Length: 336
Image 1 (cartoon, rainbow, N blue to C red):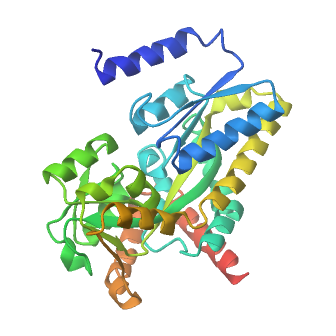
Image 2: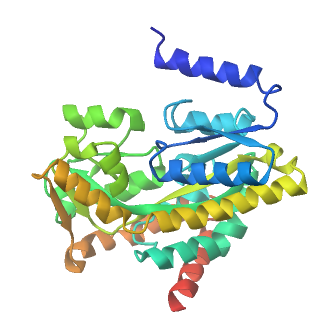
């Protein structure tokens, strides 16, 4: 039987050798399964492109072509035309993108959050040139849901995370954030997380509720804690040379499909968090799901300033300008 690595290499070889024969097929990889948020977004994008052009879109869900770093590299090299990936994994290439891991920066209200992503000058004007430097065309960013902690022991404050090995993406600012929360951040590829929780190598991880439910992370945890510290952000990108080489008509097709998929995925997520939590409780009645009070959240909120300072140290040349613009964008949205 072929190993997973050999299977992935085989798929890549097929993509590379068959590219001329499928010139009108655009390839799009993402970090989740077809029935998860990124998969739903990708399917809507595919539907819109195929309804409004002669092009077809081939979708590659998580694991098909490797882990997150692999699909990003494949997009930069032109093997893939599109990729959906969290800024958490692009932080080493685009350090300014780590701003999305400053805790308590983003609003919790879903409608305000959606408007912010759609209208933010930082996202729509300041980030695209930074992505372009890495051979990527930033098409959009969108929120995927409130991030929650899953742990083997209850969490009511930072003291409860002391000595807890907490899985994080390989992102310096996320590491800093969980250190500030009192945990021991442990970067791991996503494919290793379930087993690491099951065997006790780690004791915690964070994700939106729909992802905790769909990946069955609740099976290897006992407590889900809503601290309100963040909302999972993801970015859809195209290979820059590919996008620049499109005709004006095809660029319009892509841009319109992205806009339609953005509106669709915001609507799709309404009620998704509570629905996922209900499914988790039904599947595992013994699990504890806790929403911390404002008083209980305050010690976590108090760490935000130190993480923000770290972002300004490691977040690249435009860290201050982007942070300032994001805050101005948020203020503008929240004041309406």
